[in-house]
Amino acid sequence: MSIEICKSIIAREQHELKIRGTLMFPCACYFCDISDYVTGDIPWHWHEEVEVVVVSSGAMNMSLNGMNFTLKKGDGVFINSNVLHSMQISGDEGCILNTFVFHPSLISGAAESVFLQRYVRPLLVCDTLPCVPFYCEIEWQRQAVHCIQEAYEYYKEEEFGYELIVREKLSHMWYLIVKNMVSVLKQQSQNVNHNIVRIKVMLDFLHHHYEKPLDLQQIAEVVGISERECLRCFQKNIGITPIQYLLKYRISLAARLLEDTDIPITEICTRVGFDSPSYFSKIFKRFMHFTPSDHRKRQKKVR
Image (tube, rainbow, N blue to C red; front, side, top):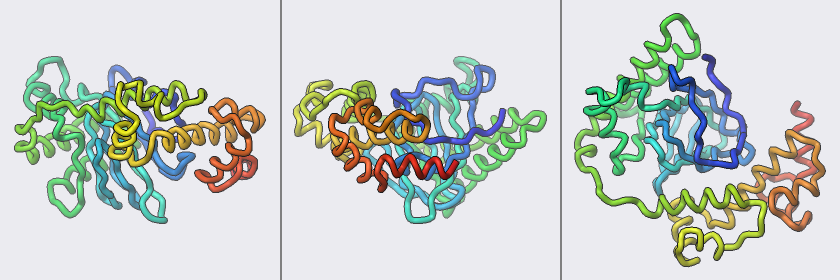
């Protein structure tokens, strides 16, 4: 089971439903160069599986649940199940990540096992702990990063028994989290973060209707809030307005169509929700720093 290379694929459904790894070994490993993504960042998404990331080179800004922090080379992060998150390059060096995305059953084993009851479920249901950053200056967090890196190397080599060792290393990482975050795990909040629930619904709406004319009122009505509250919700949790997000999403889709197909630019313009080729070209250049035709030419030269 080889390491996969993350490509700049932007799915229509940002709530990812695909199986990671296999049913027998629900774990996938990725080598990810953030600069490979068409807009230079890993877009907002969430999934049932947990995710652990180590910064192999460069630095990145991590955004999730209204939180923002920077991770440099040697740092890492644990991202809990169903947590909305995105990643952006920090600085001019670019950023390369080694990542595992795995179902918690990889650690917990059989249903209702002691592993699930005592160690796995308390972390999964802890809404006060959407993530755990690992900073290399802190001893136990440095150990957690080391576990992930070792698991990555064994996964890459695929020698006999690597699945056992990968599971062991990720289990040890999990142990370090629950051991060192026990006080936080006991402070389980009873409040649902309604803003995050709203954001996920609105993002799903945008991802499924991006090709249609949309305005702020329509987006706000999806979750029954005012336009002002919709703006506040997006700004607080995503960092941009709903319309800015929609434009960026449309441009990311257009960039992939320009790279992977020979569809005429005017048709791509319409497909991704623009009714004016000149406006499409203007917005495309704002995000991609090149016109659509120049972007297509550059990508063909790269190939």
